[in-house]
Length: 199
Image 1 (tube, rainbow, N blue to C red):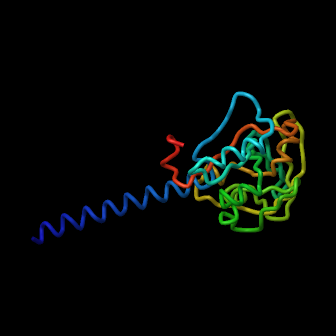
Image 2 (spheres, rainbow, N blue to C red):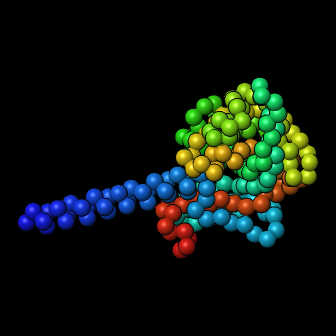
Image 3 (cartoon, one colour):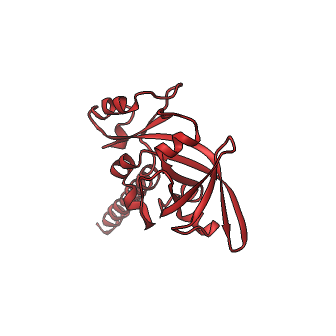
C-alpha cells in the first residue's frame, strides 16, 4: 500500500510540474506574441475593416495590427555612444494594451500612444543604461534616424525579446518604413491558444 501511495504521489507531482511548465511557457512566450500571425504577400489595405472581420470569428480574442522591421538604436551614455541592432515592433498600441496586456508587462514607466514614444525591454535597458525619460535615436534600414523618448520598460521573462525588441506606435512605424496607411501583418490573439489550427 505504501509503495502504491508513493507511486501515485510521484506521478501526481510530475504531472503538476509538467502542467505548470507548459502553462508558464505559454504565458511567457505567447503572452507578447501572436497565437496566429496573418502575413499576406502584399501589405494590408483597409486594415481596420479586415481587422473587424477577423475579430468577429468565434474564439478570436483580438487582433493587433503590426509593422515589424529591423533597425539600429543609438544612445549616448556616460561611457560614450551605445549602438546596437534591434528588432522594431510597430504596434497599434491601443489594441496591444487591450489584447496583449502590455500594461501588465511594464515594470517602469507607461505606454503612451504618441508617435515619438518608445518602450524597451528590461535587458536592453540594463545593457545600454537607457532609462525612462531618455532620448534615443532609432535608425531605420534605409538610414533614416528619428529621435524617440523612452516612456517605459517592459519585461516578458523571455530574454531574447527583452534584450532586442523596442515597441513604437503604428503611425511611427508607418512613417519610418514608408508604409502610408498600410500594415504588414496581424497578430491574432485567441481565447484558447491550442485552438489556433482549427480557427
